[in-house]
Image 1: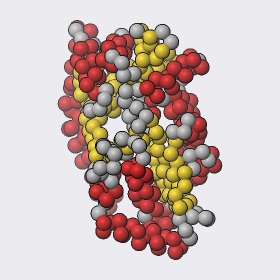
Image 2 (image 1 turned 90 degrees about the vertical axis):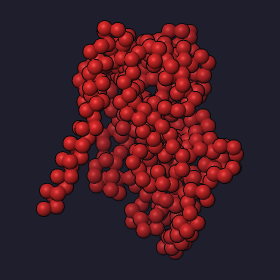
Image 3 (image 1 turned 180 degrees about the vertical axis):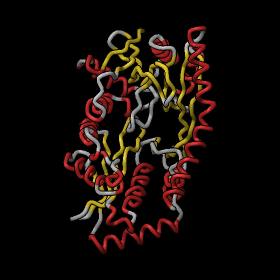
Length: 374
């Protein structure tokens, strides 16, 4: 069992097949670290040539994989370190690891990462779940650990078949009736509305991008089509996941209008939310929520065990609608001994001042809003 870092450009066909095979067998599924997602992100959206993959291998078999970059600072803290590469659209940083002897595999991964720099950053990894215990043990054995952040985000869990969980337990009967009335009013305006799976329709990828750009994200310049290479990234990874039957692009539409769309990725027995869009012209009928409620029903009717909302922890809509939670954390592993003493002290100090920094920034934003109001 040996660990290597190889650039994405160096990976050949057998490497990519081994990476995909590892992803299909990973103890904790993570579509955001699969080649079908990482390659389009690096090549099209960010156009980086310094992204590598830290792998643990046994011969030609990949036992673990984590995209990484060597950076001169991380989250504003100066100093060279090796960091797991987690970009804007990467909503989970848990490494891909096979289930057999995962603690030893992770120990090898961590030793290799710390061999590159005094500090090794793992960002948005599971605090609970099938890999959490092994990862915690490996971190404790191989390094000194600085916890940078820990948070929860919305998720759905389907426990023992169709048990006491489901849409009726998440949404009150009053709210369901309200959305039902809105749907009937919507159909009076646009005709019969249906939900269709457009995962295999390449033209739907462009329709999704156009719908996003036509709304508030387009006005703010945050829509994917407003950013060079990001639309190409979206269409690329959608096509790759669709080829494997692991894209869920659902569309709420009438004969003439696309009213809402959402994109999810499937990995193992789990679904991972990517992005929703809706036609703001029909916003009064809540088309996005209509599609979301149908999506929740589909989750409980299927064979999946978990649906990760992949939203910010402060997203009140999903926190209220989705009853479960998934806990994540970001940590910095630092070399033991004299070599890591300075780095450890630096990271501890940086974490200690974060609350004060957030308060100062929040106060500055409030002052800016007050000044704008005047």
